[in-house]
Image (cartoon, rainbow over all chains, first blue to last red; front, side, top):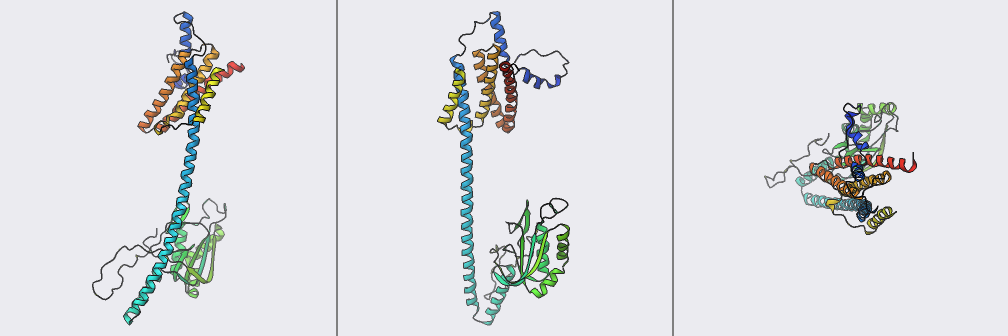
Amino acid sequence: MAEPRGAVGRPDGSMSLLVDMSSAALDPSYAEVAARRARGDLPPPRGRFHARVVTALVVTGLATGIAAAQVRRDAEVTDDIRRSLVSEVERRTEATDALAGQAADLRAEVSTTRAGALGTDTAGRALAERVALLELVTGTVPVRGPGLVVVLDDAEEGAGAEPGDGRVFDRDLQDVVNALWAAGAEAIAINGQRLTAITAIRSAGEAVLVDLRPLAPPYRLEAVGDVDAMEPAFVDSPTARRFHSWTTVYGIGFEVRRGKELRLPAAPEPVTRAASPLTTSSPAPPTAAPTASGGRS
Amino acid sequence: MIPALALVLGVVLGLVLNPTVPTGLQPYLPIAVVAALDALFGAVRAQLDGIFDDRVFVVSFVSNVLVAALVVFLGDQLGVGGQLSTGVVVVLGIRIFTNAAAIRRHVFHA
């Protein structure tokens, strides 16, 4: 584009690119050819619309139509992919649930068989008792019994001075869970997720994850244990008092009540992290107890 | 009249035939369309200015489309294809608007 530039020192000189873009919006070749025609350097134009012009226009329209059709088809493909992903997720979740049920059945079967095998003599019965206690402590069996129910909930929108003030965070749940353990809880579950010594309570974005599963408020913590000892110990704990004061300060929901018959599910089978072979013929006590609160963050 | 009919014919053909564009060419098609539209608006303005020349139009049409696609291709190779596509669309968009404004002044004298 050989357009003559303006005189040096134009006030918009520093914006020559922008100026060029609008002043040379029409291809300068048109003017050039017209000037040469006027001088007689070129023969006068033939018919107004040559075949190649029409061809170029058809090509433009064709490209526009194809591009539009392409965009529409791409959207359909994206939709299809999303639908298939959703159904895949649903299918896998069902399969996981079925397998989890199967695992629970097998675990019960193992327990029964083990109890039968160990129940023959005194040493065996002692071991069976020990196994039962460990199962309870590690959360690998469902438990039921009386206990405390603590319900935590986010405040209504805009109740706190700043957004997020009235939200229940992962660390709040950690505090309450620890206070419940300290008060003598024997087994705890949050919204039906059983807690073990290695269950992590974390947050990802705005969601609270327990054992990597996202939970939604309200958070219902069920703690099975000796209620008569647990309730005063928990209610008097600094954590419970703090939350109680937060109900008025930030408007979060915090409620403690007794549950007559709580049913907590089993936690997922823990991954075996350490094991050692038996050195004697008699069964040795387990050497790989789960490390205490290793997963807390 | 003939040019408008040619344009409509192309659009209808593209929508009806709906051919599959090779994956490698897909990013360049919309850019090529914008470049072609720029040449088109330039041609209409030249026509109204009375200096339209079919040779200039075809040359500017082909070079516009090729250069726009080439710039985007180069950007893709350098990892800035998306940004260069935006740049091409902005520059050509400004030109289209400027030419459209000139056409408007011709047609409506306003």
